[in-house]
Image 1 (cartoon, rainbow, N blue to C red):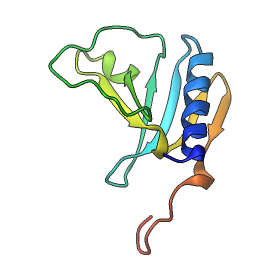
Image 2: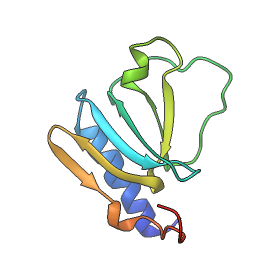
Image 3: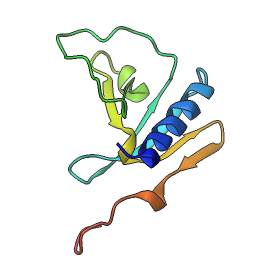
Image 4: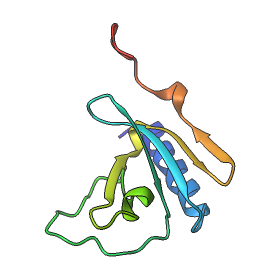
Length: 108
């Protein structure tokens, strides 16, 4: 993990922590290259139930999707800070659009 990656992870986690219980929206690129947005309350502390394994990767953040939580169980999602494009809350935005990897020709 590079120092710039560690700085990005720290910046994202600090931004989210400072939002308190305000809704946070994160836009990121999934492993398959598609973009996804997720909204969550950083202070949501409901238990994750199941037999999943504990994540030891410091760049992975697990959250409970605000929109899916309204529909019932199964709302837990995760995202990789290294793939985050932006984080928004309370009218503020932390943007990483310029830092994303080169997209191969023919893909957007």
